[in-house]
Image 1: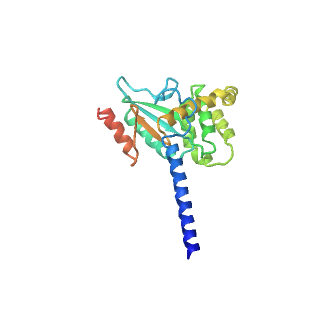
Image 2: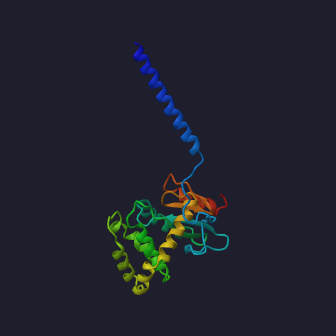
Image 3: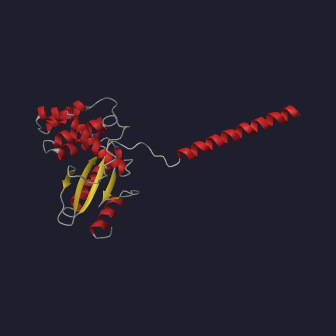
Length: 221
């Protein structure tokens, strides 16, 4: 009997000791956050001067910004919706696109680099469309599809030497990463994420984006 009581006391002491250690660990780590992304010392901006503007609205237009991943199926599903909204609110909105390739998508960064290389020849929107319209051909591939993206550049009539140079230039990848850094600092964790006049849009239904834009255009945001 005595030995069983001793064992119980020892067990209780061990459990209490572990709880104290766990409590100390929690208290010591309370308030800590993940390491900041590169460039996190800068003030994050929803739109920068080098952001890609697909539509420039009239004076007083509402600014809609999309952080996207060209390989993201949800972004692909929103693509036709976005195209319709751009027509519906033509002149009333300025539509801006920013990169946010997700790490789980093998070719999302390659696609963003292809789009940025095309942007260097003022052909961003053509590549933007091509990447979404062909997403089913290359999305979810587990090997690089950079050659396919280069073929898109050729189809679009880009200067391939200039395109290749842009793809190989570290500044192109840095340009993509600068969007990612802003996105993270602004709280973007998934794609697509939309901002209207600097405020993030909460998406629960397919028409939430249209309703949010309409409300902003009519002075409701």
